[in-house]
Image (cartoon, rainbow, N blue to C red; front, top):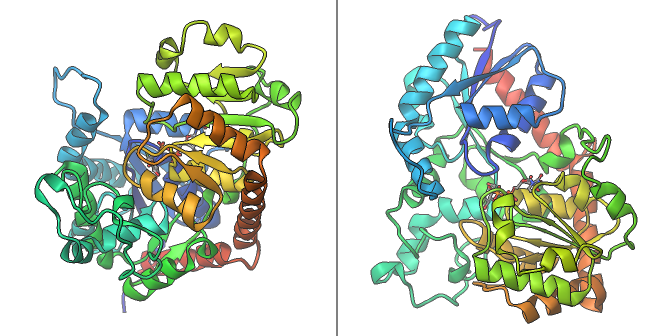
Length: 460
Ligand code: U2F
């Protein structure tokens, strides 16, 4: 009989782009807190580690350490503004970089690795885990419906022919041959499944991930069972184990970042009427093209609604002339806000978003209906879920944002009966989410199961 491993060591491998590393760190913290006998080594690029560990205001844990790995960028490379280049460099060198990082962690901690927890994007980690003779646990940082489209990519491609140049003529057909997809159309699928460049580094990565999930000891997702129960039940029946343990933003200990309210956002929100404010943010990666940005600004101004806009400093120059001056009593434009706190403020009545998964969960938690302008990846699918499945918002399909379109959307969400109905529906989802993370809720029970699996596999 194998001897019990008294000093288990888990390596956690992050994908260092967009909002991937932060939720992974949040989950790792929960695990490290619940299982103090296990040491967790968190591996990401120096820039990503700096950003997620610095913005994590929780006290450090003695059994959680970070290690920086190489970002793969060639010497002398000049960034030309396309983040996809950086992702390409990273993915090209990631298997080697992570192996080096793990060697450093092993030397430092003094114990071999007994399990690999990774962002699900890093599908090649299944092979590294095999080499090490340890289990692989992928963590998916978006929703269950999105991961299902990657799990079923081969099936979808066999049913929906891909035309030349990645264009399919069956865009409006629903994917009713997949459990839980009766309202999802071909056009809602992330690019790279049947449309767009199927050979791009990201499309190939997601396709490989979908095929590799079956090798995961357990697949862990930042969601809750009641949100997409049919899809979750289906994935549970196909994969070794499939556990929803979120929303992470409701599980992690929330540290108030308002403290002194240095930017004045909180006191400004406090002065606004309940449910009257439009909050605008397109996440960490996306900024609408200049014409849409200008149309959005004009729509906000014309609607008269108070607004709070998280807009990168570099994009401010694209706002219409005089906009900031004219709207100084109507709204605030700032480069960054503590979004979960903003969305939970009673004054916020609508969220203009790109439909990133973390933003959606935070909006549900804050009971805020959404106006979704999706751009890439899972966002189009998420927009469809928001508008047509959960009915907690509307979507501007394929863009572009227009001044009148935005005015009407704000009016509907903030002032009309439809908006009130959506608010009621999002409130119900929030209650389900809270129950899920409560003492006998699904996410809490699933987290305990996850912990048990981790303890079992690392004790051997
Ligand atoms: C990628 O996501 P993004 O980073 O573009 O968007 P979100 O998943 O919505 O996450 C944005 C996070 O940044 C926070 C906000 C969210 O937690 O609270 N934030 C903030 O605190 N303050 C601000 O002023 C602005 C944002 C990808 F693009 C998406 O398609 C995926 O769904 C997502 C998850 O895989 O990753």
